[in-house]
Length: 227
Image 1 (cartoon, helix red, strand yellow):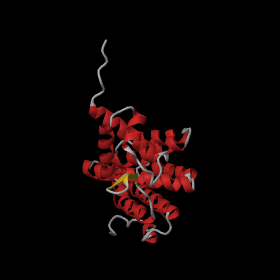
Image 2: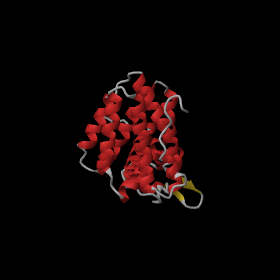
Image 3: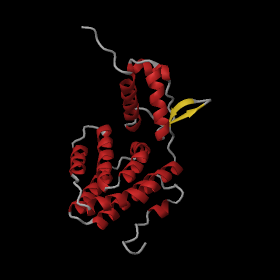
Image 4: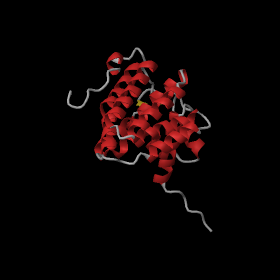
């Protein structure tokens, strides 16, 4: 039987997901050059799927394309961390509040916590962390809000990967995750939102204390009716 070649879109998606995974798990580090010919050889594909994958990753903010330097993994600094986490602070607690108020299932968040606890390495734990946060905001009932948070999800994961490499804080964050989920499952929408806000703010404050506006990030969201 003659084998059927894998369609180009599938090759592109495969290359895209693999490069993304390597970036978010630290195998490809900020500032590292991404050479099309080298990546094509590693994945056993032509340069076309690699080129298309890199364009997509540039659109999500994980890589940077330069006329002079070529393609590199995006560098992470305090200003970049502040920008990404500022968006999360504005949107993610509200998305969770809405998910709890509408009685959405949070089974996926519970499963992600279990995955993180059972993770064999930091790569698996990092991916489980991303899934936990997404499982909190995705069932908010507003698809546009979910897509907006998805747009910064990879950049937030890159910030986290860099911060964890410098100073692992898994245990503290795992405890915060459990408390957020406990409040959400108890139906305390405002309490869960406040706990999530504090969790996000404290992480970026610890990891990047020099970020402009870092002190402001520590402020808890106003109570309902006091905004």
